[in-house]
Structures are given as structure tokens and as C-alpha cells.
Length: 134
Image (cartoon, rainbow, N blue to C red):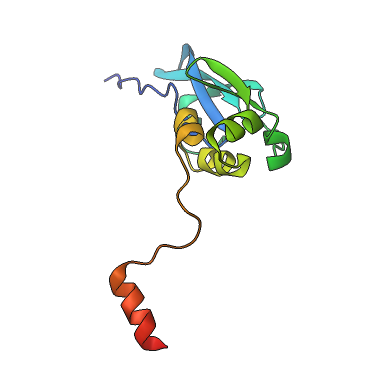
């Protein structure tokens, strides 16, 4: 019984963003979809779908660091800019974009979502219990 193809387009797996389906190869009577992915460093790599979903491949093999990431080009709504330019445009830090992408956010969400106020938020009942402890 053939399984239904899971569409991975525009999903993020670690540093890899799935661009499109390349081909489906048959092995042992089973369909194996291969996807074209773009790493945050800018390199394109072909990866099998189950390898992506299982978390066995999360980058192209590069040693992308936050320093190199700042110069990477991201495309949002058809516009291409470096991470530094996007960060300046939206008033956030490049490290926010880096961390959001590593947590699995889409590129558009990682770039355009505003950052809340810094610091830990404490709910009212927790604040009261902290005051009584003093």
C-alpha cells in the first residue's frame, strides 16, 4: 500500500530550509522522495525526506556560526537582504533571527516577528509569592 507524500516545502530542519521536491526514486519497492534544501550558509543540498524528518541531517556540513550567519542572504516576500539588513529594518538583533531559525520558525516569521521587552515575565500570583518570600 503506497504511502502519501508528505509535503516538506518551506519547512525548516535545523539550518536547512526545504525549497522543492527534486525526484522520487524507488528502492526496495518503496518511494524515496529527495528534496532540494538551502542551508543558512547559502549552499544548496539534496536530501532524502525521511532523513530530514528524522533529524539525521540538519545542515549541509558547514560550520555556520553566528558571525558568518550575519552575512547570509534571506528572502522574505520576494525581497533579498542580508541578515544584518533585515535585523536593522525590523529593529531586532541578528542573533534573534539566528535563534528563531534554529528553533524551527519559518524564515518570514523569524525575520518579521517583533521581539518583546527583555527580561523574564512573572505572572501576578508568582510575583506575590516572591514578595512573601522576602
